[in-house]
Structures are given as C-alpha cells and as structure tokens.
Length: 315
Image 1 (tube, rainbow, N blue to C red):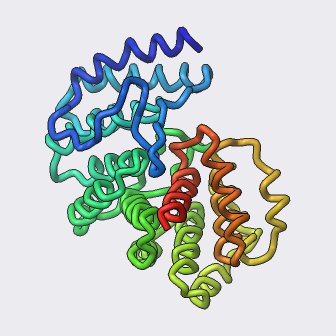
Image 2: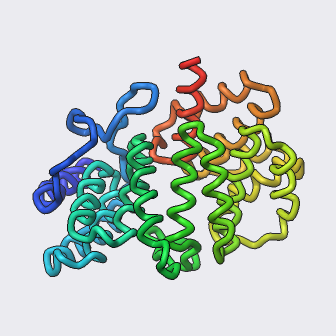
C-alpha cells in the first residue's frame, strides 16, 4: 500500500498545478485531510485497495493525458475531476470542477459534479447553489444519459443528468433536515423518464423525507407498488430497505446480508431511520453511531447518519 500511496502523491502535484485554485471556498485543512465532519472530526483521505488503486490510477493517468491534450474540452475537465474523486481526492476534484465552471459556465454538468463533491465534503449550502444553477441551465435542454465512472456489472448506466441533479439536490436538503424542500425535488424527479434503478433510489429518499415531514399517508402510498419482483442492476440495497418499510423483510436479517462496506452504510442508515420514525430513538442512535465509527465517510448513508447525530447532539 505504501508504494501505491507514493504514486498517488506523485501524481497529484501535477493536478494541483493544472486545476483552478482561485475562489476556493473550502476551509483549510492539514495535509492528508479532506475536510471535517458535521461533528467536528477530521475526514482523512480514504485508503484505496491495491486493486482499485491500480485500475483507477490508470484511468486517472488517461484523464490527465486527455486534459493536457485539450484543456479546453469540457469532457476532459469533467472526467479529470471525476477520476480524481474516485481516488479519494475530493478537495482537488472540487478545484478541478471549479476550473470547469470558469471555462464552461453554461454547462450544467460541471455544477452537477461539483455539487456532488460538495456534499461529500459536507458543504451542503454550496452544493445546493450548484444544483440550482445546473437546474436553470438544463431547463430547456433534453435530458441525457450520464455515463458511469464506476460501471455496474452490466456496464449499463442507470441515471441521467437531470435525474442526478434532482436526486443530489434533494439529498442535500434532506441532509440539512429540510425535508419539505427535499420532497419537492423528488416529486419533480419522478416526472422524468427513469430507469427502475433510479426510480427506486429516488423513492427511497422520497419516502424517508415524507415520513420525517409527518406525511405518513403519502409515504405509504408511494411505496405501495414496490415489490420484491422488481429487477434492478445496482440499487438492491434501496429496494430491500423499501421492502423493510413495507414490512416484507426482517430488518435484523437485512443487516447481515451485505459484506460491502458502502452498502452496509446505506443499509445501516435506512434501518436506523426506520427505528427512529417508529419511536425507537435510542436504537437508531446506536446504529448511526456504529456507522460513524467506520471509515466509510464518503458514503451517503454515513453522511446521513452523521447528520442525524449532529442534529440530535445539537438538541
């Protein structure tokens, strides 16, 4: 791992040089730190497995080459930012996307991707600003399939630019506890032409926002059509959680079904929220605290657990 980390460090000074560092709204951090949690703890640059590092580092080298060949190409800047983020360098990814904002201010994609990484770094207000701008820019544009940087087993994209902007803007509001604003985004997104994977992901957050806003009747209505027969490519964790909310699965068994850390954060937050909305606050807090003790801090389930703990501690 040490030699991989060395290669990682050797590569990024070049990226720092080419990326735009002006108007950097991120708070300063020590070396090796990406940001701070909502509870004030440092978020260390994630460790990457050797297998993933080799694959993603090679793709990052290709992205750097593409950028050097044509730095005025929006695709080159966007992919450089995305590949940088996949290696855990989220602050640098934000700076690269900021370069994209300066170069291509009419391209909603640079705002969409920067907003995503603002969420990762707990900068929810900045994320929302970017998604608002993306929504304005893409208002009169046809939707477009968004290519995956980390493809699923079928190498089949499951989302679009517009659905991702609505999804992530809704998430940013949800993480802030602005559940009514999140609901508005999810309702708008469900009017799009969605794959079943994206629809299930949106229904998951939509359901929880409705429950947290006190609209139990509507929450039950929107997941009534959800069944275990739905065939998905990659969002099985969200589907399983929706089935738990319907009373189909035993939630205690669900927690034992996944060996994937990212999926465990997703499942853990959802089960914790299920306990919370059913009046079992202590159990919810215990689950969220367990998630917070892991090192999966970039995962949305982790961020949501952290946000819940921050709100409860603040109370």
